[in-house]
Image 1: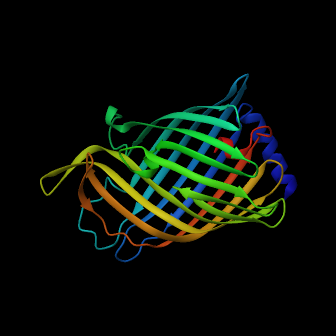
Image 2: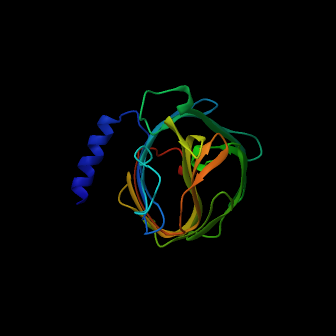
Image 3: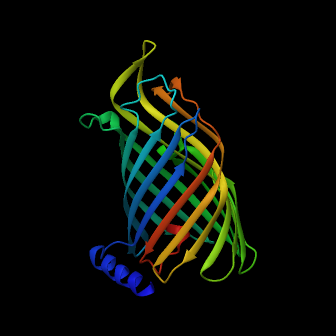
Length: 288
């Protein structure tokens, strides 16, 4: 098994010679008799470049979202079952004085059901700016983030406090992400987490519902649960997640106005993530 993994690792090293990190992810929220379900898959590549005064990080990601509607859905959903998102990002990280660091990124994103030709309405601009202050075994992060994954038309605040208690226990408290981590050993750890999940996408062909135009689909949720991470070797890492939704909604929108609301339920959540990482000099929490 390890020999096969090493062969694959060597192949990816050749194909993605300039690639720092490859993430492949799958998330599933099953449908029920009276509520829609969601399946998402994504692949993300990151290319960090060490500069004299910081780190330049470029990345590209592709996400695919499939919607499973309840059997008794009366609305015609033929053009609402699949959405795709392509994102390019460029960011810069810099160490400042007194254990401060600074990071910012800009991410032009194309997100649509792609039922017709690409248009300007399919494009959105995401980004963020974050300051980080390290104090011994703890750190503060403060910033603003704009992301289609949060399905909000305005930037949201990012505030969290992280601390490592010892070699096994650490935690992150804040918004929009919180986790408690326990490391069994150097290769295996478990996390209790709360995090957002979602997407916002344009409809290539606007539809009419009760004499109102619908131009976008928007899904938002918060999930909580456990994930187990296993470091397979120096490059490969696999994470398995399981949990439950705390909140979810799925709406069809006209701009920022809700036109139609689908039935959603706080359902079971499952996820799988495979990471191939060639970065040895940059800490993971600085490039995620």
